[in-house]
Image (cartoon, rainbow, N blue to C red; front, side):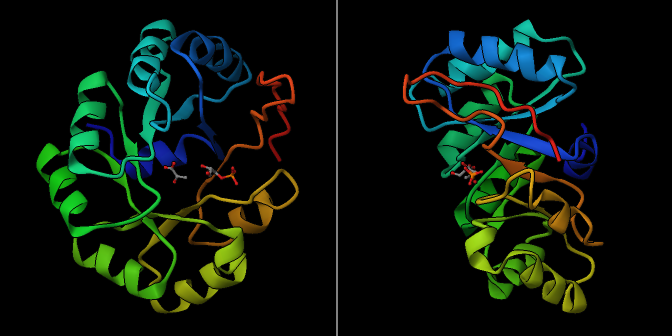
Length: 199
Ligand SMILES: O=C[C@H](O)COP(=O)(O)O
Ligand SMILES: CC(=O)C(=O)O
């Protein structure tokens, strides 16, 4: 099984994707993959989320790494793994979820926004973490401070990041990739209009 750090290292940007249907997911993910983005996080915020993961995984070449975002409960984690998600991401961290993903033996990125949460995640054996919501939780300065006391932790900051600020995070020694939705904005017409500005 691929480790979560390998997945993070495979792409400098992980698009965080919210789709309205599996068909929309396939269409947009084809374009993202075509632009060189092989690690894709499909959030489970829409009822079609699991179907979208399964459809994109089936549609894209085998080197695409399709994961699930907004994994909030053990049940969602189990369903996402069964749908074929290669990894899971959560905006937060709970003991129940930590226990469940350990049992599932599934590459997982729990979300933290404070030092105490990061220490708790580390106690559970998670050394790769999502920093969410990054921009409003202290941005690069927070991660720099964390690095001075917990240098063994590696982060994927997400939340409020754009092509203008991505490098401020990635230039830190404890950051390998960033997540964000800026590549797939939804217009007033309700459709996704790709913005392939990576950095
Ligand atoms: O809801 C948050 C998204 O998952 C990522 O944040 P963003 O939209 O600020 O890039
Ligand atoms: C925002 C986020 O962390 C997620 O949907 O997984």
